[in-house]
Image (cartoon, rainbow, N blue to C red; front, top):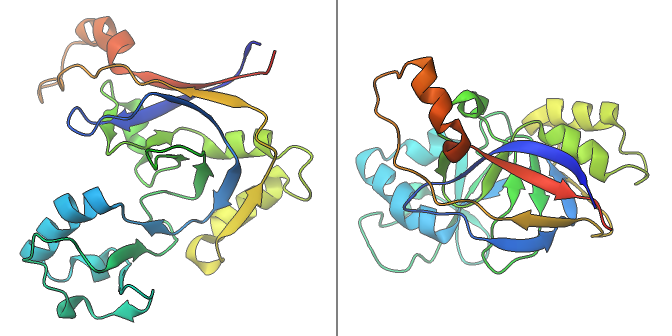
Length: 219
């Protein structure tokens, strides 16, 4: 089949590369919460909490015990490097790291496609900035295409649900996984120098520093 959708993407950093896999998209989640993956919890959240004990509260995150009950962040030993007996979950809203849309796709790497709350990164020449998952540009367009004929999920309803942000409960729309998705990030080049490059130099590196998500129609 031919290419039916193409979306600019931000994929894994050199030290946190996105995996190569082929899978199917199976659900669209609007206004998702974000349960922080274990690796990010160990490497990032703990470090930030050691420096700034108010970090999780400021980022609208909740700390949950093994039974899913919310606990006081001050009750956690953030200095410990051992296996955590808690999880951290970020509320839905404009501040959420996943943005307004998440797309589920079964895989053994626990990665998925999602929106972002930092859309300015899509205009950058270097788009290897994530922790493994792929942030995609114009995710609502993909959601509309996937949910064609799936009940009442029109573009207007998807926009309204997304615009409500944290004032609206997360919503999930599932569909038959009929569209294969190849997820194959290239090896990222070194990050460009901080100093702005001339436009001619930037255009020469665009091909290797940018990555798109492509959806192929079934044959």
